[in-house]
Length: 314
Image (cartoon, rainbow, N blue to C red):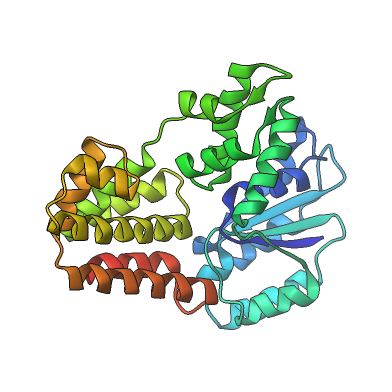
């Protein structure tokens, strides 16, 4: 068996890997699973791992991580294709790609013909809500539809983060309980909006180094790049509205009411940020964010590189 797992949804990708390895007893895993890094890939090491006999089990598994991203055209790539065709019948190979891959590459094309290729894109919001509902049932609770959407708005679409938060909610309501919006707001902290303000704050001040650091922080927190683009676009639209109302000399509480912001700190920050941009700059930034969203969805640009360029060119 040869499998390629790729796509940006790390949680579902990891769950699939766990399912593929589920038949190997814990006591035999260290003896029958070999992990190789694509960045340091050596064909001899791969052959040695694949040809070794299983021990205390009937199969061996070789996991190769990020090979397609790092392997260049040449003799080793061509030899690898031949090696894959001559693998012992007891050997399984699982290729895992953590980042976007070039689907035009020769190795990817070869794997589409000879392996099981499984892609894990980020789910659409409606699909994520359905998935959250299924996860809730597995935890022996129920989550209301509005509560599921509220949960997504607070923590984003990262699968691992959602699992952690839903597990916490399940512990609170106990088996058979129901999670509604009140419970979500009670237990789930909303730091995404504050982090996004900090990011846009640095953009407004043209502090590119700080903005890049804030962007990295958002990504490290488990926010999907597409979700960050959505949040930037949302924030810029808020700032466009706030700037217009601020120019009309409206008071902060009036602005918060019209725009739908929480009064106090967040509204004050939005007013300060809007004053850091000229109207034309905000409109231009909004157009660039929409362009990045389109290009990232159609394969016109790597989404992470696009976010970096957005920061550097603002």
